[in-house]
Image (cartoon, rainbow, N blue to C red; front, side, top):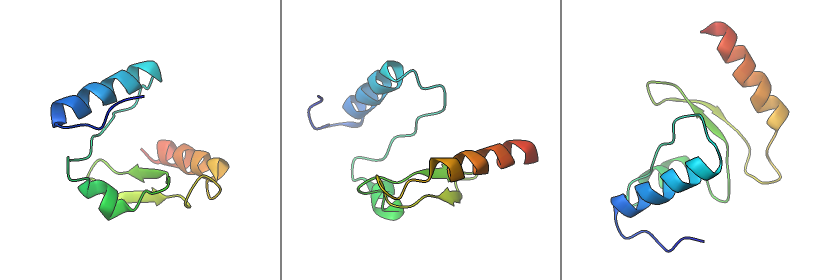
Length: 84
């Protein structure tokens, strides 16, 4: 359990710790301290997104945890990898 972040440095340290602990191999992006991305994408309670390299939303899943369709997301990602 982590304490509430009081600075971007603390937020970065927690994110790095989580990425290492979860063995993530994809880029990890951080929200600003005012949680601007959270407000824009309305990710609460949970939601799966895929962003293009330009920052556009190219996939938005249903609200989680019950609206997740992992097979749909997997199919989307597989199709996108073929297009690249």
